[in-house]
Structures are given as structure tokens and as C-alpha cells.
Amino acid sequence: MLCIGDVLDREQVAGLRAEIDTLAFVDGRATAGWAARLVKNNEQAEAGTRVDALRKRIASHITDNELFQIAVRPKALTPLLISRYWQGNQYGAHVDDALMQGMRTDISFTLFLSEPDSYDGGELVIETNAGEQPFKLSAGSMILYPSSTLHRVAPVERGSRLAAVGWARSYVRSPEQREILFDLETVRRDMFEREGKSNAFDLLSKCSSNLLRAWADD
Ligand code: NI
Image (cartoon, rainbow, N blue to C red; front, top):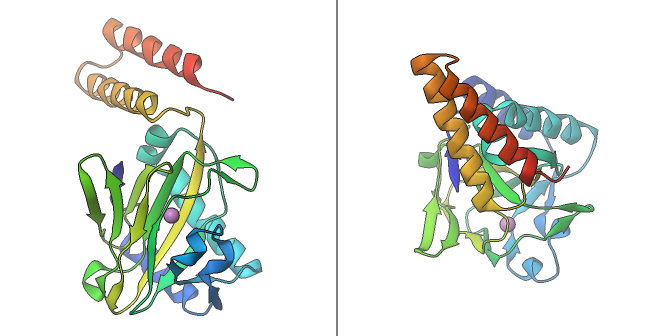
């Protein structure tokens, strides 16, 4: 699980929100599997040309983000959903579909588009070995979590919660391997900052690159 701050800056969030406000929304159950449909109670921007363009724009901000690239190693993304929860809306515990439009889902993500103080409730709650963990990030920030987890969106008790959600297929299927690659890449960048392209840096680059080669399914 990883939180990435400021995927979008304030201006970008404001611009997107203004456009999203003019879109038509439909019942979110349309895109849920039969069991998730029982607990899903929100709305989503209705598919159409303007929504498609908007989704692509948001997706390119996400895929351009360096942390996203090294944490996810994305091979492909599903089209994003723009979801809105009004007061009383929620999404009960569910697991995301393993396959979406023929693509295996490895990583789920939520990009928050409402400021946390503008609504009450509406936390994304993820089940972990250490118990439930709630997330409510600032507008423009994003959380990534394994698609294999049970998770829910707590009821919104005031205001409205706007978010873009999506799924990525990773070149590296295993979360443990992705974490090792992420840590190695972090160390590699730190090392470069400190000592430039040293022999140790080259050797670490070789390890990191060859592990990715060994673990990637292309
Ligand atoms: Ni979900």
C-alpha cells in the first residue's frame, strides 16, 4: 500500500472538478460485479466522449507520476471511473474483479478529488493483517493498494466525496517482488544523489534491472 501526494496540484484539481460538475452521473451499480452490486451505493460519470477525454487526461497525470511508475510497473490501466458519493452513500466491503475487460487487475487506486474537510465519513477502508485501515487523503493525492484486498468506502455523513478510481495490470504480478524492486530503485536513486554513477551504483543498477527482467511478464 502506498500513498502518493500531489499527483495533481490545486489548480489541476479545481479545473477537473469544474468539468466533472457539468457531467451526467448514473447509478454506480452498473459497473459492479453481482455481489459488489449488493453493497455499492454511489454514482459514476456516465460514459461518453467528454468523460473519455477527461479519464484519459487524469490517467496520463497518474502514469506520468514517477512514484506510480516505480511502485506499480504498469503495463496497462483500465479506463478510470469518476465516482461521487453524496451524504448517505457508501460502498460496502467487497473485492474488486480479478479480470476487467480481459485485463488482470493487480493494483487498485483511488485519486481523491475532494478536500477531506469538505465531507465527513467517506474513508477508503482497507482490510489488512493488522486490521482495518482508513484513508482519507487530500484532493490530488492517491492511494495504491493490492486489488486482492477486501475494502470499502465508509458512509458519507456530510457533503460529497469525488474520486477517480482505477486498476492497473503490473508487469510484476507479485506484490512482494514489486516491493523489493521499489526499495531497490529507491536506494539506487539515493545512491546516485550521494555518489553519482559509481561502480556500486552500476552494480546495483544491474541487480535491479536483472531482477525486473527475471520477474516481469510482458
Ligand atoms: Ni473496490
